[in-house]
Length: 141
Image (tube, rainbow, N blue to C red):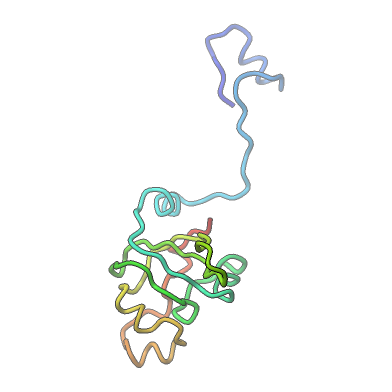
């Protein structure tokens, strides 16, 4: 609640539950300061288009994004940069934004291993992380 505390009777009205000032409804979802920074302050350097299975895993299961779920890599970025994560559309319309996260791969590395399972990724990039974007560094819209 925000109200004018200098106006006589305003604080008493708020405490009595009367209509006074501006009321903000509480939200159930709470983000850490890190995730708020990631979502609103860290600029995205590219976009990852993901398949339907990865969309379900990220949206419903709060899971990490693995290279096997990546369909396309747009832009040029380094490991540690923020990327937008979007659902690949079967139609010609624009991709729907789904999340934003910090990528463990550069764009060039991820282009080499997109769509591959973890064992195949390790053959090409032996020191690579299992996750393209770890769930701790991922914020879903």
